[in-house]
Image (tube, rainbow, N blue to C red):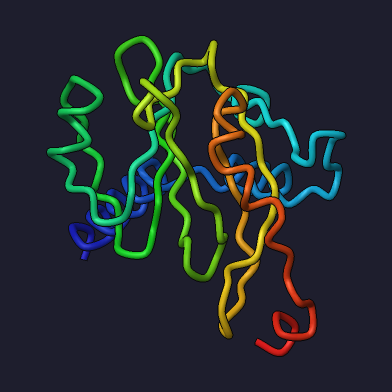
Amino acid sequence: MKKNFWFLGLLIGLLGCSGSDNTTLKKLQAAVESENVGPKGYNVINLANITDFEWDTAYFFQEATPVLDIRNEIGFMWDGTAVPNFHHRFLFVGKGKVVGFVDYNFKEEFLLSVYGCNQDRWIYPRSRATFASFKYCTTGEDQKTVYTFIPEPCVENIQQLMGQKCNEEKVAKK
């Protein structure tokens, strides 16, 4: 009986320490969904300002990225998990170790499309972690409001999306 309680306690402890950072996710979501669009038509979000921990580099991974690919990209052994299906991950590295990560369901929880920029390839040093964000609407009958997240210097690469406004009646019915 004691053995079972010890194992259960260990399991709860491990799961509690290895999960996604919900505080950072909530801050990211609030910043992205903010209606405070600047004069250029987008919000400016500094990723460093929404984290409560120090980091040197942020990485973005798409759904179903195996842990081996994550390790190869960050350049060291990490005992984390693969990115789950229908999820995206921001992973933060500081001083040679993973200091935090955020997973979110991009189909249901948070419709955020992250774009790469020039040489960054979804690798964002803290010094270049200022992003542009705005909402747009997908085209077709199944309209959805989607938010963008792209390094600010490259926002002109997707600026045509700013003009894709939603028909609120079509979106509201879904």
